[in-house]
Each structure stands twice: as structure tokens, then as C-alpha cells.
Length: 371
Ligand code: IPM
Ligand code: MG
Image (cartoon, rainbow, N blue to C red; front, side, top):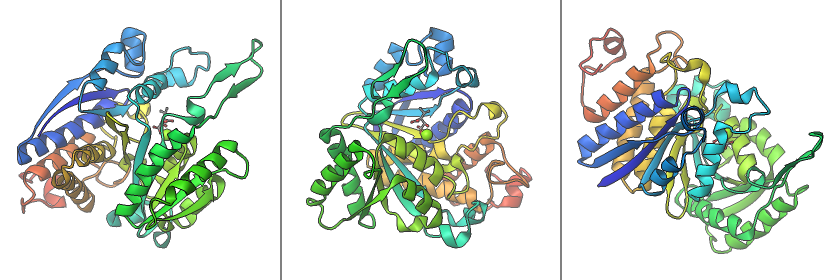
């Protein structure tokens, strides 16, 4: 298969982790005889610095005319700490999602057996957790009308949803549940919000088309509690934009590191793949950022194009790195490896899964044939 991939690595650790995802994809292209062409473009704070715009037109055009977008991270403290900044890096990401029509953001959350003790949650609570979060991505309070009065003393953000916006992601979530454990939980705040009541009504109606999937509802405050009390009860979670943003960061605690969580954003014609973590500016250039979320996002890209064996090859390599503790300091305090080395290991494992000389000691002593 030939795929044109736009690479928007962005700010902070974005470029370092995205480079590792590219390495993994290049290894896949080599092993499975595909051609992946990467084209880089600017987004975020670096784009503001260079062009004044967090999403230059050239970047948008490239993304709209490519098969897939690989996204790194955006954000810079100089904007976070300045509430008066008129242009912000995040606007680039939000505009990109909106313009490309990426209405569904899929965030898988899994408790890896080898990492269970890294999570601050108890083993017996997180064991067996395997959740797929379907977060609506182009509507709700993120995109509603924003206002502030002339005195700067009263502000508002409108939260609005239409039936059609709810329906299209609900269908995707139900179809995903059919392929999984056939359970869908709608997370909302229907005891307070009109938009949530619309979500319940629309989703209940759609459920009639998916009789094999059981549907239940959970208020978002309770869902936040259940996520750390009993996460293995969840299969597919469906929710609106902001609840999904919050719940998915909370869910990342289950895996032991936010550096593990990948995501896919899909629409009718475009698709984008990005780690859920931010730009982690304090870590920039130190080689300590975990590249696994970015690499697993590349696996989601492959899966999106039905390259299932290829996606599995990436996931197997990631699991091997976790098993052998070939990991960055967030997961490995004793003998951590750098972002680059973890990426090298994963790419090399994809190319040579049979290498028997690969064990923790050899790799750490630099004696493996692999690194
Ligand atoms: C995410 C991020 C973004 C969001 C920010 C960077 C705008 O937190 O992808 O979860 O809130 O959607
Ligand atoms: Mg977020």
C-alpha cells in the first residue's frame, strides 16, 4: 500500500516522539513492502513563531490532501501563562479537527500486564481493564460561541449539540462495541444539561439498530469515580467533547503513564493520529519523553487502513519493550533508556522479531545486535 502521511510534530516533545513513530512506520514499510511518504508541516507554537498562525493555510491544505495525519503535541508555557494572548497554539489543533471534520476521537485504555504495578491504582482494581473511549471532537463547549463583556468581568461559552452530530459518532461507537464486549456506556450530565438529555434521547433511539449491544448511562461525576473504583466494568464509553477530554486523562492513570495513550481522530474523509499527552515542555530535548503513545498512534493509523497484521507488529514490539523494561524514566526509574533508544528498539524489533540475543542485560550493556 502507498500512503501519503502529513507529519505535524508541533511543540515541546512532539518532534522527538513523532520521530520514533515514523521510525516504527518505516520499519513496517520495509517488512511488509509498503510505501509511506512523510511530508512535514508546521502547527502550534512553532507555527506561531514562524508564521504568526498556529495552523498556516499550507499545513491545512497538506492535511486535507493527504491520506493521514500524524500529529505530535502542541502547547508552550509562554501562551499558557498569558491569558491575554490573542493567538494560542491550541487554536491550531482545534481548527484542524474542525476543518478536517474529525468528529470522533477514539482513545483506547488498557492495563498492560507488565505495567500493572506502575499504576498508582491497586492491581486488583485495574487488572483486565480494556476500554475504548469515543469522544465527540468537533462540537460542544469547545466550539460554541464565546463571549466576554467589555469590562472583562462576565464570560460565557455556549455548549451546543445537534441530533446529527450525536448520531454520527454514536453509530461508530455502537459498531465498535459490536466488535468488542458489546457494552456501551453513555457518559453525560442529563440530570442538569439539556444537551445531555438530547444525547440520551438520540443514543437510545440509535440503540434499537444495535440490539446485540447493551446500553447504559452514567453521569459524568459518577463516571469519574467509577473510572478509578472499577474501570474493568467499562467496554465502550461514548461521550461529548469536554467530558471525554477529562475522562480520558483520568483513564490514563490506569496504564501507569500518560505516555502510553494513543488516539485516532476520524471523520468522513480525513483521519489523524496523535498521542493524548501534551507537549511536556520541561522535558524537551532531554530524551526522557515516552514515545510509546506516539508509536501506538501509528499502529492505530495502520489499523485504520485495514493493515491489521502491521498494527499488530507494532503492538507486539511495544509489548516486548515493556516486558524487557526498554522504557523511558516514567516507567523505569532504575535503568531508563532514552526516547530515541526506545524508538530504535521498537523499530528494530519490528524488523527482527526473532533476534534471540535480545534481553534486558544485553541491551543495557549495548551488546545486543539490536541497539
Ligand atoms: C486533548 C488536548 C486538547 C483538547 C487541547 C490541547 C486543546 O487536551 O487532545 O485532549 O482539549 O482537546
Ligand atoms: Mg486533553
